[in-house]
Amino acid sequence: ASHESTRRGALIVVEGLDRAGKSSQCERLGDYLTEQGHSVKYIRFPARTTPIGKLIDGYLRGSTNQEDHAIHLLFSANRWEVARSIEEDIANGITLIVDRYSYSGAVYSAAKANPGLSLEWAWQPEIGLPRPDICLFLSISAEEAAKRGGFGAERYENETMQTRVRELFRTLFERQEDAYIIDAGNSIEYVAQDIQAAVSSCFQRLGATGSLRTLGPLAN
Ligand code: 2DT
Ligand code: MG
Image (cartoon, rainbow, N blue to C red; front, side, top):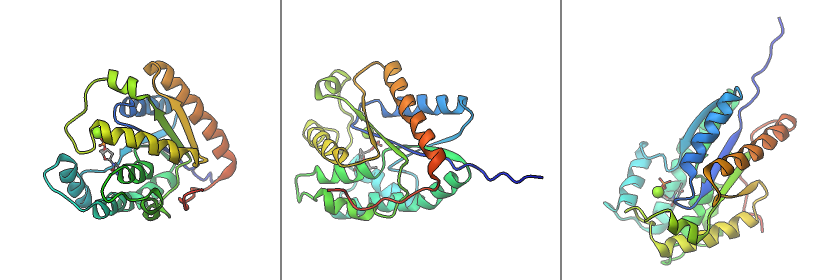
């Protein structure tokens, strides 16, 4: 009998500002890939239920305070906690749709005014984590974001932070070769189709290239 090795899954990351439509689009993409016959899992960062995730959750809700470098490293550690299981799932043929990843990690911390971590410093602890096969950045304008309703009550959900985060995402994704910028100001249906096209071409590339890579230093 012939032994067929499992084709690995893909690591798909969805990034964007609050209200860019990440959750709905992750769900749509999951349904689409499932219909295509893929095994799919959805995960998100921060993963709030792990031991480190609980500290992060308290910080985001404002029930605790943390020094900026310290909380930054906790967000990164939260990814390292899950890294092994990501690698295992991918090796077992499961495609992961990941709602926020290292890009949010670097950008939100670097967007803070005091003491103001640099993007370069903030990226360092991400080096060596599983590298996404594709990163979809859902981009919406400040005007469109405003139309979609008010902010939530968590830390970072305010105009000043969001404006800085928008600028830093742009700076980061200009340098990121695997990033695919999606105009998320369009209708849900239109955006979903854009995402499906990007992911399909990613799957075609994957067929040829093999194993999961790791994140390297920030490109200049
Ligand atoms: P959600 O609203 O998606 O739950 O995110 N954040 C996220 C960071 O500051 N660093 C990180 O590494 C990650 C993954 C973005 C909650 C907030 O946490 C921010 C928004
Ligand atoms: Mg949020």
